[in-house]
Length: 297
Image (cartoon, rainbow, N blue to C red):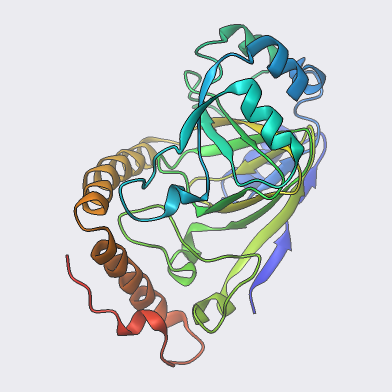
C-alpha cells in the first residue's frame, strides 16, 4: 500500500543544515519559525483583505479547472475579492484563487514579509497567493516552472501530500502536462495498481508554518477550513530553469491546443500513456481501464 511519511518540522534550521539535509537531498521540510518577524503573520486576515482590497476583481477557479474541453485551465468567473472571501469563509466550496498576484495592485504588501535567506535564486517579481474554502482541493500536480517553493500558511489548516519526482510514473503522470488525476486521499488500487508501491510525505500545514517543496515535487492539497497561503519561489540553476521553460512551451502549445481541438481523444491518449508508463511498477500485470484505450491524436 501507499506509504506516506510525516514531513520533518524544524525550528531554528540554519542555512547550512537546510542545504545539507533538505535542499541537496531534494527533501521537503517545514520551517516552524521562518515567519516569526513578518508583519503579515498577524496582519493578514480575511477581514483585512476585505476591508482594504475588497473591490479588486479576481479570477475564481473551481474543480472544473482540470476537466478536458474549452474550459480547460481557465477560470470559471470573476468576482469582487470581498465577495469571494465571504463565500469561501462560510463553508464547503470548491472555489479557489491560485497563482494570484496580489502584489501588482497592492505593492505595499511586499513590506509585510521577507524572502528566505536559506538559499539564493528567488523570483522576487512574482510572489503568489492562494485562497480556498473548506473542502477545496488542489489536484495532484507539480509546478510547471520546476521552481523550489516555500509555501507559508495563513489562517486555518491544509492537508498536503507530496511525492518526489522519481515517483512520477507510479502516480500516472499524464504526458504533456504536470498533472496526475489520482486521488491520494482515497487511492483506488484497482484502477491505479502502481500506487501500491508509491512512497511520499504528508503533513497538516498550520498558521505561520512554511513548507519547503523541492523542485518538481508532486503535491496535493486539501483545505480543511478557510485558509490562504503565500508562495515564494526559487530556481536552483540553469537545469531547472530550462526544464521549466520546456514545460511551459510544450504544455501550452501542445496540451492546451489539443484540448480545444479534440478534448476527448486527447485526454484518452494521455490517460493511456500514463497507464503504460506505470505498468512496470504494478504489483502484477493485471488488466486495468487504461490498457484498453487505443486513442490516437
